[in-house]
View 1 (cartoon, rainbow, N blue to C red):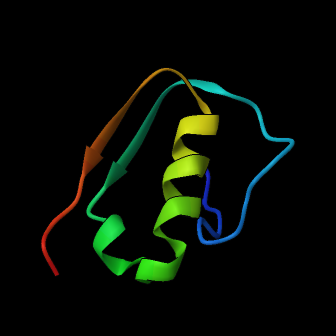
View 2: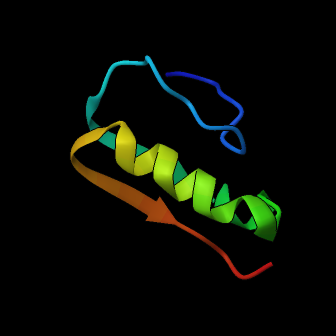
Amino acid sequence: VKFLDLTAPQYGLPAYDWVVSVEVGEHIPAKFEDIYLDNLARHAKEGIVLSWAVP
């Protein structure tokens, strides 16, 4: 388990087979959504499990 500021680009971290982000996206300000999604994709080797509720 890692805790990071996903509204800032995260580099230099290992990639994992799977990245899980559950009920986080709705708390990310809209102007940082692209960075958030890039961070998830950058660190996933196989796939991403993503659940994003409507705020």
